[in-house]
Amino acid sequence: MSNTARLDLARELHDGIAQDLVALGYELDLLLANSATSIQSRKEIRGIRFHVDEMISKVRREMYELRDLKIESVQDYLSKIAQQLCGSALTKVEIADFFINEVIGDNVKLIAAELLRNSVSHARASEIELHLSQIENHIYLEVRDNGIGGVTMESSRLGLIGIQERVESFGGTLFYQSTELGTRISVTL
Image (cartoon, rainbow, N blue to C red):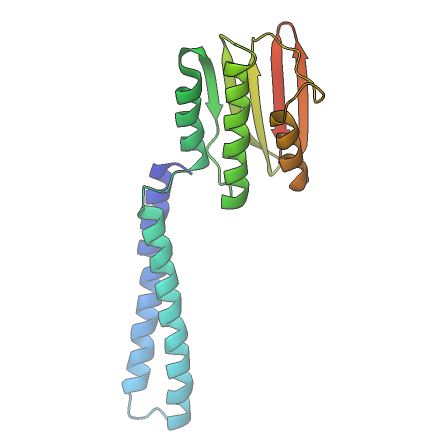
């Protein structure tokens, strides 16, 4: 999720749900202060008031986390690492903005970094592309290069095998095509 989207969502939470919960809390306080409210009703209202306070705290925590711009999205990380690893060889970057949960996101980061490093170091590519999108609720990651090719599972020292194991642990798929014209590797999670 982009920083702008995070800030927008934090504002929407503040202006919407958070304000509604605070107003509900005030209404409950008024009921508690009303001398006509029975003792039994006060106990029940007090219990509800505590739950409302807990919800307010949870929403505030979420708002603060969304406003913490130090939290780097998968998309921002991939843009940065692709440029760092590939430099001028990076010819195309297409990264869609969509939510990726933290566990899968950490794995997408590791997989992408390994594939990009392989394109630079082993394939000696002069043109590298990075694509990230969402297809039917699945994450689709693809790295293409114009390197020397020849990638196979059998020739992989550990990198591609490790990626395949990581992908399979999430029930995903790995596809690769490698010729003398370059390599295309895609991962669906």
